[in-house]
Image 1 (cartoon, rainbow, N blue to C red):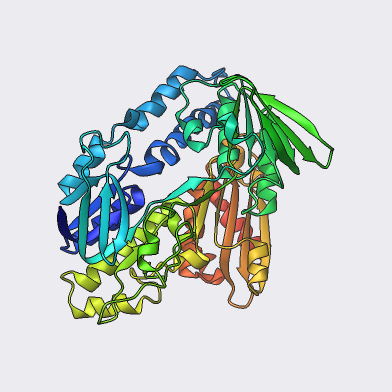
Image 2 (cartoon, one colour):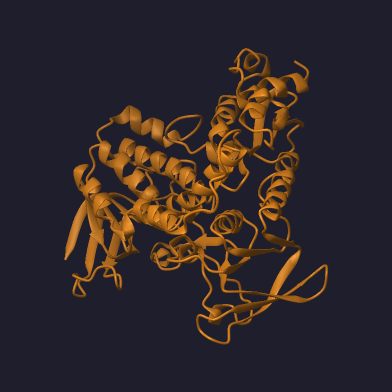
Length: 494
């Protein structure tokens, strides 16, 4: 059975949903294919549940730091987990399915893979589409196919690790109980956030990292987070590598043998979380049917069109990709940004926008809705640890490697009046990178309470390339932590 649509989107996470929605707004018929839950990793096993687990600990710290407020004591674990379940809909995606229907997008349940140009085969996904009765669908796209299948956790090839049945981020965010102790392999975003959350919830946490924490951020950010984790009781061990994992009894304690600067040793915990990175989920998407290599990231142009795939007779692309599968930036918000670009480009090329829109989409340059330009110089990242870490643009090391003439300017947030009002224990730091030739900010990092909410001002400054002389006239309200902008400009010499 073959069905035809203008656009087929493989993957109905937040990224696929955004691409489908933007294409549908352009008057195109759209089908999305999903093998698991509509709403994807972010809604059920990543962003939403992890931040829901982290928020109570942050709120408790705010209360503890406020004069005259009684210490709230330990968290109510059952209440925290219940709120997590509420936020994830307990695995029920009917609301998301209803939304797709409300905007005229067809949902096809099952595992989708390319089987040729503009052709997608959908087979039932085990344990998900129980009513499919083995039925296979073939979908044909008149215009375009979008691949947005996300990424999967990487479990390193450590002897005994796979047999120990470790947690990945999915099990960590969906756990029905808090283990007495938790060993975490990896010092990236998942490792740091889950160390924070489980320490808040009462687990004894050991975090093992081969290098420092948050290696993609400025070094001072990882150092501040490491200090805060240790102060919260987390055993943070840097410069160590797992060599062997043993779990003699299923569900029993797990022991990790490590090697590092201090020599060999062992760490034992009730559970083991592997947080050593993710890889694009492209191994079973049928890339070989269109001349691409399975299991590798899909290289895209800024229009999100996939490179290395033949175009139609007028030169229009038909295969697009966005989100983690591209290997560009592994964040939901950046993937959704790419998805909006993808949907708008497809709608302009094939929808009702006319020749003018098609021409604009074909050029795909500049700060237009048809080019994911922010992927290069204005990427945003947030880590919801205590303290939070947020940054936009390159780090100092990345800027230097790129040949940018940058100067760093840094301010201790604890010295800003708004921070002192917030808490006598306020700890934080902000650093910006100034292009000294153009006198514009090209990167910024904020570490401290609510850093995630403070990042967008920096993002606007970076994207808009606001001259420092102009930024000096953006007067921050007093007393707020946003006065950091005034202090940064003063430190630069304005």
